Image (cartoon, rainbow over all chains, first blue to last red; front, top):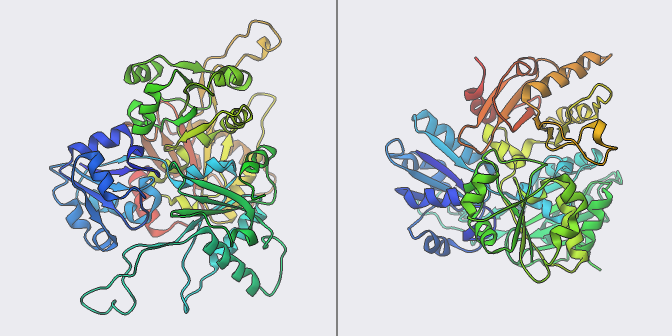
Length: 271
Length: 271
């Protein structure tokens, strides 16, 4: 059996009881470590599970699926994913490959940022399409996600923006070399994301007056862990906020908030 | 401390390790039992936790918040919620009331249907606003949720429809009486939901050709449990599908599917 197990968002103990039982009995256990991270670190997970983990970076998952699935028709193999297993397309692909090999797959769900953001008080039912904000480079500054934010805003719903993370990314220079060199890990902060959004706003020729520097945003950091932080302020103010270590997410609120949403958000307002 | 703990979707063992530790140490533990249910039942939960639970129906939660929070400033009280704690507005309200009383609140997240639906292969980032489909009565047949489905469709995103559940609902006749009488529990099935949507389509004067009887839908039952079931077919076909026991959810797919979404859905197609 091939198990894909969500680890939730906080630390070791956010795995479900069912998930933990499976981890303990599997022959090999992989930890997916490039679409998200648990800030407690791999060593803490290994100690809590009482077993070794195989850290799976992007190269292994995207090119080494055969190695990961090896023998899973006869024995038990687990693949651990921060949040919920279906947060990233890659894992859907892994399930399909297992099915091609007639390997049975079982999924153990867990919290993901997509539902845990409810902790800021904005109603989960009032979110539109989720967007991802990528790190810009000097030559690549996409802004198509901004249109989706505006489209959600017009539909009177909130937008959750997932912020880029770069873990074990090969440097541009080493891409063509045999021996890859990796950039230091980077995790986009809410202030960096807000800054990119402000730059997009400045470049716009027409001001449609919908999403502006004054729009209400919610910045979230380390949701699900003991030291999570949430702030509510304008996009302009968000570009100066420091919420500490990763992972961060940013919400652009819709134009109309329910009274209960407003009341709940009040505790997170920058005074 | 007042703990709000998500139980996930399947059975007893879907609580997180952290959540279970808290349940074991609390003085009182409430189980919210009207916005959703765990099909394993309360007795199985009590046996697994090794303790008694206080079942909290709508009356207790909405009118007895003071009783639930009683003493939580000095001792530990837990409130268990199927799925994730922030799935229902009521629980946000409970947090606000605790804060008014200067009671500290801690949240333990878990999977909710809002992220677990990813298991059908439709990408979570491509969902628009979630809608709720209520049971119609002879005199009350709202259809405003249909506009949201169409709006999502126009925006090329999928719609997750949460289906009504009626647990311990007082009968209309007993509402004015001192002794309330309750209707038997009801859980809307995907076929009932599809039937209501078809009725809305029939009533429409203009046919905009967007969401129709031929639109691709995904029906999901008991997601997260061992016997979950998923089918993909047209809305028309969905009105005749029997997916067995509760809980059910229905997805109306957007007009354009990613190739990976199509490939994954194929396994759930009604042939």
